[in-house]
Length: 144
Image (cartoon, rainbow, N blue to C red; front, top):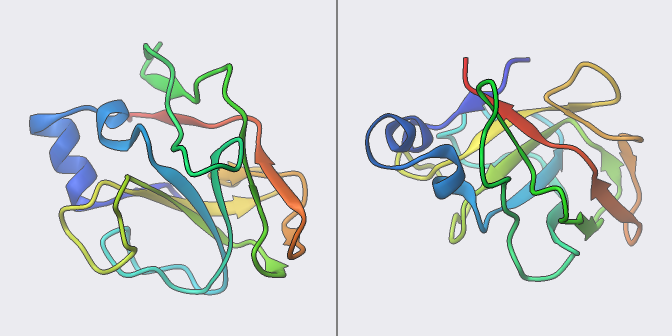
């Protein structure tokens, strides 16, 4: 699956903001189950984990600069969370602060597949267990 961007994220990048500015302070939500039709649609499936800075209420940030059309997670940050349910991770959404997950054409959100290799978000094990820690060691976004 190709990474999908919401209408709100596309509009921000094209006219009013940047990918970094639109999503800094946000969180990554990992789900089991059916993938929403697009990143504007309401969240679907079972929330398995919400990843934040060191598993706290603090949101995530990106590197200060992009290179060759790609921006990465801030290198010094630990993106982690604790799994809140047991299931097989199938997809994720990066949500901006305040995003409720409801249908929206104004929220900035990329959404993609989760897998072991070749997915939009690769993690070491897609079988998540409630109460276990979850980390994202690498995250990059590329503008094509």
